[in-house]
Length: 249
Ligand code: GLN
Image: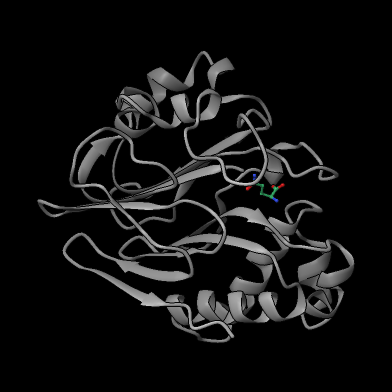
């Protein structure tokens, strides 16, 4: 069920994570190791978004095709260096459209967002959640998928002034109440902090030497990778990683 990864630290080529690591996102697209509860490969699209130097808004590249079919991205990724980025490969949930705009990361201003999992009982369970959003947000969803709605819910809280960790946590609490059994591994980045949750799917963190990686699966066999237990909220910067219990009922 989708794989995602976020990086913060000294600038590195995007290819390090996308293609070069022994268990790179490319490898995780066709040979993931820890797909829990459904899905075998992640061939329904991919995306990567990074923060260019100079504090400009993130740049994004995404597609509805398998990552391994893009002949040009390896070169682009080798030539593109960033100190903060998020990338994902998608395995579409049954019944959801396969389109480039359904691939993470979703973006708004400085924010990047990804979701690994599903909203249980979609779409009926999500009706009360969607009803709380401004109509315009519903009319401009990236795609008619649970992940795009989750992003609209998180973004709405951010626009109302919530801190990133609080926006993510409150969204998980709301969605879990409306749609019990949902699998909600969320990942949010503002360029300086990564906020991630575990609820139903795998996640690991590698910290140290002034950089941090948060990924669905470790990108290599470095023993510094730490698995994150289920039902946790992770708040990571290049120098700090804090993990909290989600505290769901
Ligand atoms: N449900 C989401 C989608 O279809 C995410 C799928 C996943 O995590 N595999 O896009």
